[in-house]
Amino acid sequence: MDFNLSDEQRELQDTARRFAQEQMKPVAEELETEAKPLPDEWLKRYAEMGFLGINVSEDLGGLGLGNLEALIVMEEFAKISSAVAFPIFESSVGPVRAIEHFATDALKKRIIPKVCAGEMIVAVSMSEPEAGTALTDLKTRGVVDGDTITLNGSKRWCSGGGHSQGYVVYCRLSDDPGAKGIGAVFVEKDMPGVSFGEQERLMGFRGVPSADIFLDNVKVPIENMIVPAGGFPKLMEAFDLERCGNATMALGQAAGALDEVLEYVQERKQFGKSLVEFQAVQMKLAEMATRVEASRLLIHRAAVNSQDGLPSIFESSVAKCFANEMAREVTGHAVQLMGGYGYSKEYPMERRLRDSWGWGIAGGTIDIQKVNIASAMVGRRFNQRS
Ligand SMILES: Cc1cc2nc3c(=O)[nH]c(=O)nc-3n(C[C@H](O)[C@H](O)[C@H](O)COP(=O)(O)OP(=O)(O)OC[C@H]3O[C@@H](n4cnc5c(N)ncnc54)[C@H](O)[C@@H]3O)c2cc1C
Image 1 (cartoon, rainbow, N blue to C red):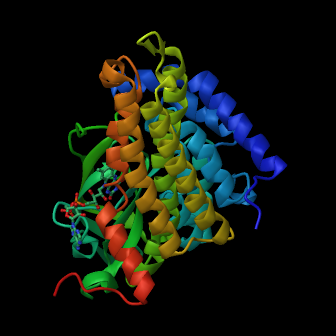
Image 2: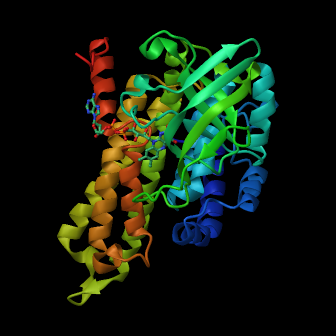
Image 3: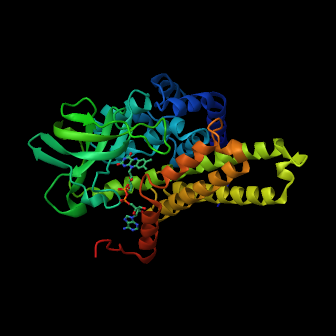
């Protein structure tokens, strides 16, 4: 077992860190104040640098590297902000991976190279007004008739909603009840019958668009089927990687907060000496660092053990759960250590705390991850309905 990154991985990390630290801080501030997504010209820059689709195969326009490499790069951007890291999250661990793993070659070739080139963003649309944690209660229906699927339904909380050009829409593709009837279809933003609600005003995640999606008799060609009815377990398998990405986004909030607060406590003086000279501050810093390091190791374990396939539900849920709770705690401490300045919108610290809260809801709440973990421990699923 080797806990060190290879020379190549370190080089990639340095490149991502330099790019993110030197170029993305003012952009992050702008996205936060104006609540707008990363402009297209930046998406193009990311693509040129190879940051989109790091772990996507080269024949589909990616770099052909592993999940670990993708997560290492993502963390460096997430340290700056969720909004500037979000396109990397979407392209490396998001719904694009479900397309890469399960869609037909024709669909893969139509979508994925565009994502890696920064010409298309693909979002995932699972949640519905009545189906959040109880995802298998979703009602959006896709009726297959010859070579067309007709979709009807309402989706909720879609990150990227109204902005992304493509959507992986979870829907019912047969009359089978619960998970058995669920599959997923690729829907394009400008297809007739697709419309969006108002942009959501969330506690955090500013710069990541979010909106309801309404599907009214949307006719989708059968080639856009990603997985047919019965494919829900496959979708959840792909989601195991998304969980590692979610955990990394949370880790980034905490690691970025720690880096900045470390500088702050060495500069800020009270009672005639730097804050870092107070033992209570030293204890806090050590606790924060310990939690950040432990979280990174759990994420990297899940990624490395996936051997560039999809991670296990146990390891990805443990990583997500720990990172989500850790990020809320560590960013909370960072706000506190900066006193009034931590609470001010003039500094990015309070934003990290707000975003951290969101990562513990997005992609399955912390509590349902704990149910997953206990399930994997005893080797059976717990019925939530009876
Ligand atoms: C920032 C953000 C981004 C998101 N992005 C997307 C996206 O891109 N696409 C998408 O489809 N969805 C997205 N979501 C939606 C997200 O997946 C859901 O909010 C989440 O799954 C919880 O569903 P809910 O909000 O309906 O809460 P509910 O399911 O109503 O849960 C409310 C509370 O009850 C608890 N609870 C419910 N059932 C159980 C149980 N069986 N055991 C223990 N506790 C339980 C939950 O843990 C939670 O604390 C996003 C959400 C947020 C906040």
